[in-house]
Image 1 (cartoon, protein in one colour):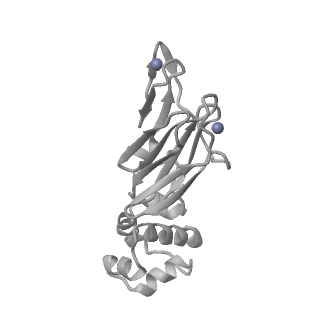
Image 2: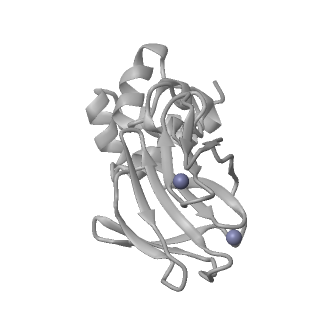
Image 3: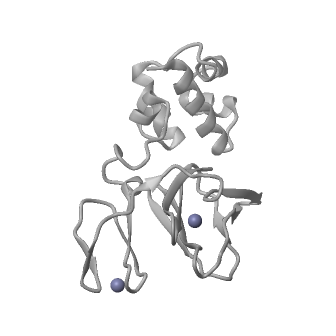
Amino acid sequence: MDSTKTGEIISLCRKSKGMTQKQLAELLCISEKTVSKWETGGGCPDISMLEALADTLGINVNDLLKGEISMGTNNSGNMHKIKFYTCPECSNILTSTNEAVISCCGHSLSPAEAKKPDDKHTYTAESVEDELYIELAHPMEKSHYITFAAYVTSDRVELHKLYPEQNASFRIKKRGIGELYICCSEDGLFCEYIR
Ligand SMILES: [Zn+2]
Ligand SMILES: [Zn+2]
């Protein structure tokens, strides 16, 4: 366990849930000082504590130990494993959360490989009460536009279909830390954290 990384993820997840250190400490029946020590990397949570802590933070124990939220590979059986497929013929968007053979219009489709975002394929988020207003920094021309965006948390996928010559923006209800997938008609699929 890397105490600095683990500390960072504890702090990040706690804040994304709108919890203070004191509230988290109370939920776990420990002292506020202990939480603060973890978050500054001054100590690691006791093994017996890990499951309750991960649970409270809404992440899995593995992610807590590694200090990062895994992007779709190690989380068996939940939405973080989601894969996206786009049919080149009819632009149908299909998803699967496990190994699958997907076909559409007579094509067998392979899942899009999600890349780390660059400046053009990223988002800005503005918090409006319990919602996030997402705006994508990308042109929306017929020849090059964002085809869809998806907000993925462990139990849900929210898909927003986007169209050329319309705004590349939409609203999502805040549901904590997740991934935002952005699919570009020319450049493929991008994925980054959102909270
Ligand atoms: Zn099709
Ligand atoms: Zn693009």
